[in-house]
Image (cartoon, rainbow, N blue to C red; front, side, top):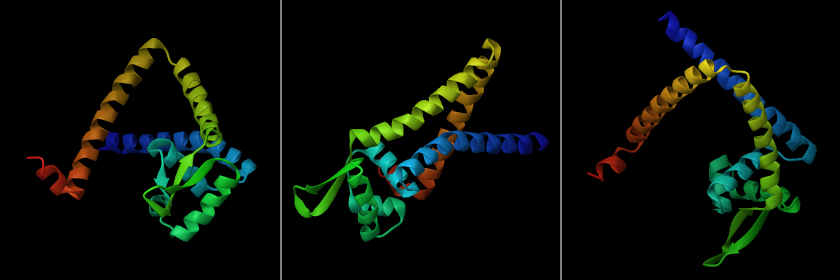
Amino acid sequence: MKEKLRLVALLNEWTQLLYQKNFSSLISSAKKRGISISQISTLYQLRYKGEMRVSEIADKLGISNAAASQMLEGLVEKTYVTRSEDPSDRRVKIISICPKGLEFLQGSMDERHRWLNSLSDSLSKEESIHVLKAMEMLFAKAALIEKDQQFSKHPEKESSCI
């Protein structure tokens, strides 16, 4: 039981360290450019999902469509995103990330990659092997937990495939 508490504490510390390393430079850069946390989140969503409707962005952020539109206006003005009409319904606005928005995100990812490379360079070959095996095991266990949690949230999806 002592080992489990120690492991959980170390995993929490590691998560906090990664969060700090990942977001401290991103937030600093965002502040310099006048970009909010909601706008950063939106840029990441657009990077991974591609085009999104304003209503989808609002749902993801837990805000109204009007608030999302206002927040997006700042990104449009900075040319981080574009807003266009949905060809099938001109009332619906589609948001896409622009190269300038991708460059902003890439800068923080590059910094994170440099830090991770420095960390991995500091490990001996034996240490790297141990960490690699442990990380592979953690990812496999996390994937199983996620799968179980998804099933418990949406059992009808799993059962319809039978």
